[in-house]
Image 1 (cartoon, one colour):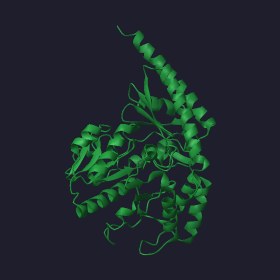
Image 2 (cartoon, one colour; image 1 turned 90 degrees about the horizontal axis):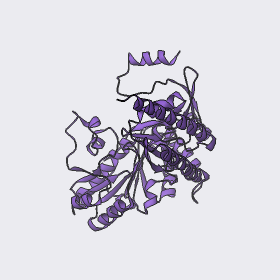
Image 3 (cartoon, helix red, strand yellow; image 1 turned 135 degrees about the horizontal axis):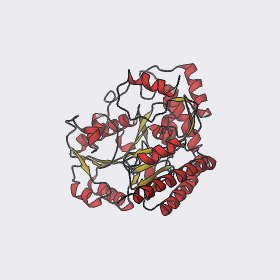
Image 4 (tube, rainbow, N blue to C red; image 1 turned 45 degrees about the horizontal axis):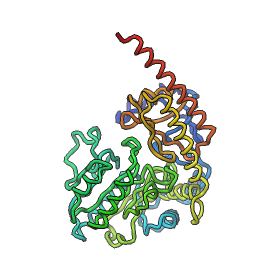
Amino acid sequence: MSSQELIEREQSVLYPIYRRLPIAIASASGCWITDLDGRRYLDLISGIGVNALGHGHPRVLEAVRQQMERYMHVSNLFYQEPQVSLPERLCRRTGYAAVVYSNSGAESWEAAIKLARRWGHRNGKTGAIITFSGGFHGRTYGALSTMDKPLYKDGMGPFLPNVEILPYNDPDALEAAITDHTCAVGLEFIQGEGGIVEATPAFVERIDLLRKRHGFLLIADEVQSGCGRTGDFFAFERFGIRPDIVTLAKALGGGLPLGAVLVSAALLDVWERGQHGTTYGGNPLACAAGCAVLDALVGDADGDAGLLVHVRNLGDRIRADLEALRAEYPWLVRSVRGRGLMLGLVLSEDATHLRDALLRRGIIANATATHVLRLLPPLILTEEEWAVALAALVDALAERATAKAADAAIQP
C-alpha cells in the first residue's frame, strides 16, 4: 500500500478535522519516521512533544510489555501498583503532595479548573479565573473557555462564565483585573501553540506578588513544556515560583494517553471521594510507560539524570545555530525563541513555506502562530542528527532567499 492509497482511504471514512502533512507512517524508531513509500524523515516535532524519548524507546516498550502481560485495564474500583508507582516518582521529584490522573492535557486542565472552582467556593474566591491571550489548554469546553483563538471557538459558545482572558506578559493589565475574590490565574510559562512565547521575569514576579497579596491559586500548564522539554523538569522552575496546581500530559505517557494534575498539600481536602473521576485515567499500561519515562529523564531521587543535561547543552547549541541563521537572513528570520528543546524560529512570512521546504528535504517540523517554525524534537536527539537537520534548514533558507531575489528582480 502506498501513502496516497492510505490517504484516499482515510478521506472516505474519517471526519476531516486535521490539517495533515502528506505522509503516511509505516514505522518509527528513535528520531526517525519511515513512510509507506519507504522514505525516511528526521522527526523534529515528536508527536507534538509527546515522544520525548523518541519512537519505540526500549525502556518504555519493555515496561508496557511487562504490564500488558499482567493486566491492561481493571477500572478505578481497584488498587493498582502502576497507579501508585508513577505518583511516587512524580511527588518525590517535584515536591507536590498528590496526583490526579487524566487521559490528556485538556482533561488535566479541566480537572485543575474544577479543583480551583471548588476551592474558591469554600474560601470566598468566587471571582474570575484569569488566563492569557495566546495560551492553549485543549479543545474541551472548559479549556476553550480559557482561550481566545477564534478558529477553535467560533460558533461553539456559550462558554464558561466568569473567565477573563488578559494580554500575556502585561503585568499592569493583570494587576488591574485582580481582586480579593479572584479564584485562580492559569498560564503556560512558555506558550507552545501560541508561538514559543516565554513569560517575562517581570510578569512572573508580578503574578507572585499579587498571589501573595490577594490569595488566589496559581495553575501552571506544563503539558507541552514539562517533563524536561526546556532542560528543567518544569518550565516554571527557572523563575523560582511554585504554582499550587500543575497540569501534565504529552511526554508523561511515552506515547500512550496519560495526563496528571499535581496538587499542593493545602488542596488535599477540597474534593470529596466521588466528586471527580475518570474511567481510563491512570490506565496501568500508560502508568507503566510513565514510570519508564521518568526513570529515563531524571533517574533516581537525587536529581537530574544526564538526559536533562543533554537537553540543556544541545538546546544551547541549536539556539546558537538558529541565531547564526537569523544573522545571515535577517529579512526572513526575525528572532529565535524558547529554551532547551522547545524552540521557535520567528519568520517574516508564513512559516508553512519553510516547513514544506524542510519536509521535501526529509525533515519534519511544525508551523504555529502563523509565522513561527516550531521545533520540539525528541529529547534524545543527537548532535549528529541535528547536523542533518541544520544542513537541510540552511539549504531551505538559501532556496527561499534565491526565490525572493528572483521575485524582486522581476518587480516593475
